[in-house]
Length: 70
Image 1: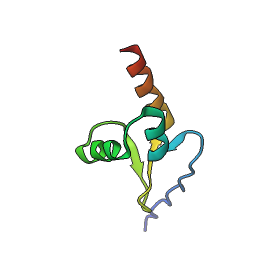
Image 2: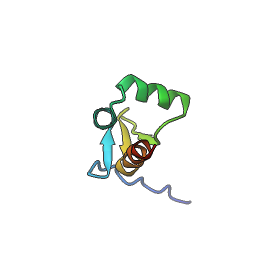
Image 3: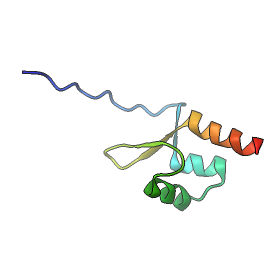
Image 4: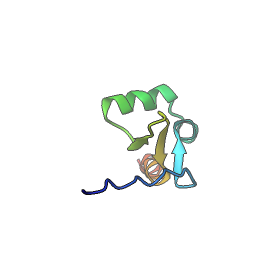
């Protein structure tokens, strides 16, 4: 019988940001981030079984860099 691998627990750290933190640095409203998630557009994210949403800091920084270059 094969064993199902145990998932590695998610550990929030400096590489991850909450939706609130993303809203603060991008000036997006929390509702805007939620709408983008529902439409499948915007920043990539992960959703934990607890319902918490996390964004990768590198993706947020890339978005800010693109906006600054435009």
